[in-house]
Length: 131
Image 1 (cartoon, one colour):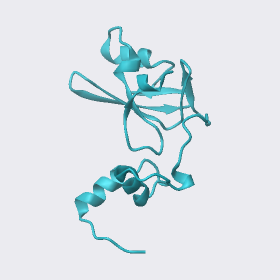
Image 2 (tube, helix red, strand yellow):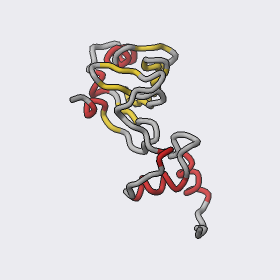
Image 3 (cartoon, helix red, strand yellow):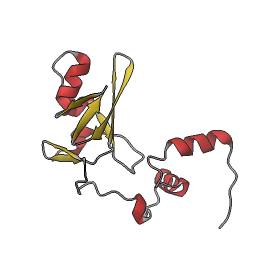
Image 4 (tube, helix red, strand yellow):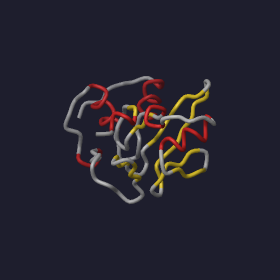
């Protein structure tokens, strides 16, 4: 195997992009470069529910799925755990109820939130996951 030299800033960025300990630096680089065929341990099936997964409106978010939104210049984050969406220490059963708790107004949570599925590098609007 060939070693390549990288500076500290590149190392930090690669480390930040590792979503779990099982995701290697090589996995991160393959994702960034668009090279398919990640090793099996880094692949996550979006369709297979896992323990702690959250299903709402026919969409299943695996446990560990990260959520984010921006509201009035503030970064808001949440995570799927124990069959629900946890935001600011509170559990929500729908994306909209979590969004309303932040904004104080009626909000369509499906266009308010982005998510990053476990093992993935990219964020996507959760509305794009609905059929």
